[in-house]
Image 1: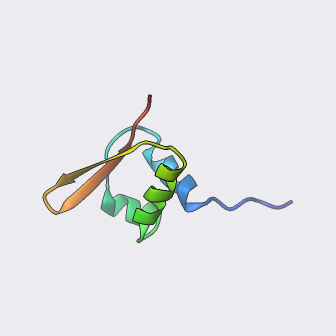
Image 2: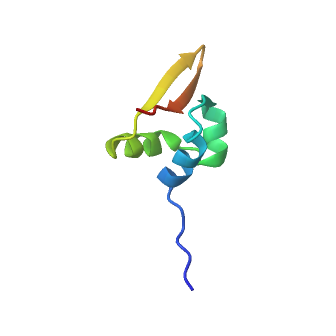
Length: 65
């Protein structure tokens, strides 16, 4: 039996699925160091991901409608 590997978008959505804010450091650990491209891919697939800046750091959350 063959198992399907999760994509980076799948990993990102798993983390953001709770609707809470998540820091970039957490996403880097769980999704991958260059997670910005993954966020763009998710947005291109029509997922609404909000970004806020707090000083020099950013945090992200998945919006639900």
